[in-house]
Length: 449
Image (cartoon, rainbow, N blue to C red):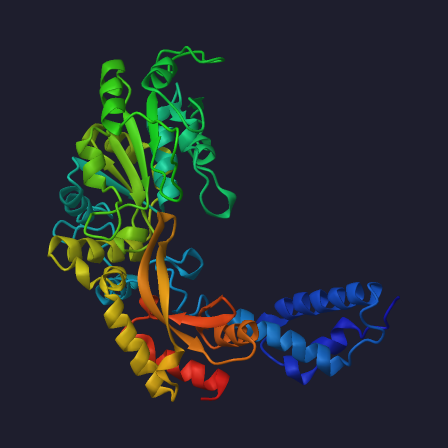
């Protein structure tokens, strides 16, 4: 069915869209989008009459208002997932935010104040990170996947890298580690099976005995199973065994730690320092996630290999911006000065179940609810870290007859909870004390308490 839709210029001339000429082209695009949607709905039999010009103009104005509002906006994470990828993972410390703000204007990013000459954006950060990680040198890129890509491209060519089929991890949004490792042109040679890979499998790849190999692989790639675990009839050589094989064959070991950790957290997560001490020549990991800093990627290892990565053309394309460098430096300072426990992520991990329950009961009382609305909960680290590990927590069950609809309304009000067993839960493990008043205000506005 066809609709008699108003002309585009009539809609654009409506007072609801009166604005600067600069917005005219954007408004026209949105008008065409709305009209196209109306045509599709008419063809599907969903509508039989076209809306009035005013209704269309106001819908376009609404879309423009949403588009012109600075995003992403702040939300309160009450899901119980500490490193919620969709919510920006690790919240930054006040010091990191202040450092980003200071660097947002004109700053000494690549400028030596003392000499007036050009410098490096990592001049101050590299030695600090190297000391913290126990590495000869460190390079920083814009995320963990970029660190892996750069390492495999710079170190793994021309022979490629050997990777166990049992470590062919898929991370978020359908991206796979092996494909990212190969994206820069390094061939990934698969060895072993899903559950069992032996040292001899790696050795065969290093001497060119795999089907289709023109030469031996240039490096060994070891991938930490950060977002899943294997049990039963499984076997993988240790990282130390692979390092010994690599030294024997002249092939460096690239160890992708994924989440990255400097220690002192719950769960049995390996640290960058441990991987280096076990013989890895180059360790790649994220600068956010378990480190608790901004999104960044770290390459830590021998001076020769890190230098090779730093000089590769990809390093320029993958470099972090000034605000990331500033926030990562502030986070590293927190570790170096013994104040890592002040980082928001570390604080969330450290709260006891009793502390969280006391906060939940106080918050329930503040909103006029009974203590019966407090639930025992389980929180997770998330972000592809510590698979299967949970932390005892406490949550508020929002009184509502429609948890799903109320959860949607709360999201629009800036609070993201989770619906579980027919209840809308607000987990206090991922809510800071400083956010409680804003959380309470949003709940009052939505459920009327």
